[in-house]
Amino acid sequence: MTYDFAPLFRTAIGFDRLAQVMDTAARNTGTPSYPPYDIAKTGNDSYALTMAVAGFGPDDIELVVQDGTLVVSGRVNTPQDEGEILHRGIARRAFERRFALADHVEVTGADMNNGLLRISVRQIMPEALKPRRIPVNAGQPAPQTPQNRTPAVATSTAPGTAASLEEAVPTAA
Image 1 (tube, rainbow, N blue to C red):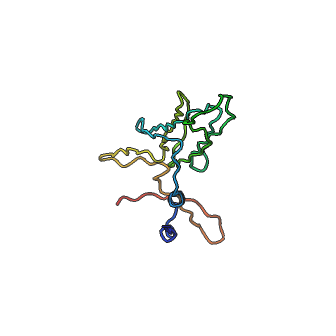
Image 2: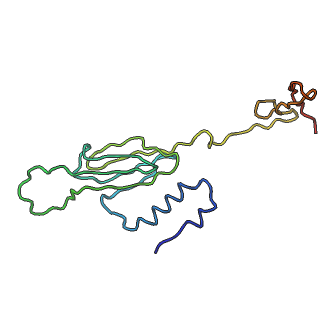
Image 3: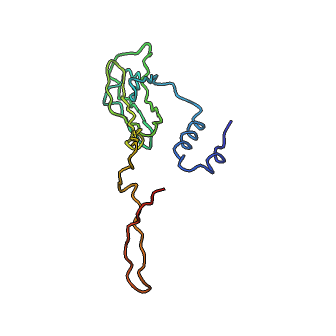
């Protein structure tokens, strides 16, 4: 079953990233199960992605963040001579896993210990999106700042002469 999201996004402005995520999710029907992974919330704005990558070393793993997607891939090196293998239970195949990252999320580091790859991710709140407390003044007009000052008005003194600038005086309501 396929979904057409075009009518939904035809009148939406600025939701390109959401459209891309939904389109990718709709197309991605066969989710790979190798290697297994956990995602844990480790703080208010931090997460840890842990992947079981037995048989891979730090040089065999590549992490790339591109277009809001974390791509974790592993390549297989030539195995050492282990003799005749009677049973192979440890999967040593190449893999690639993709994780969609939300806006304002960055990968801060990765380490490998005992066959587990741990990737640290942190959500960064831009200053413009953080809540600001606005003080309320009682009985006093708000101080004039460049943001709330009435703009200057250009007036002409006479036809054909240079215009003079007069600062508009706010009127009391």
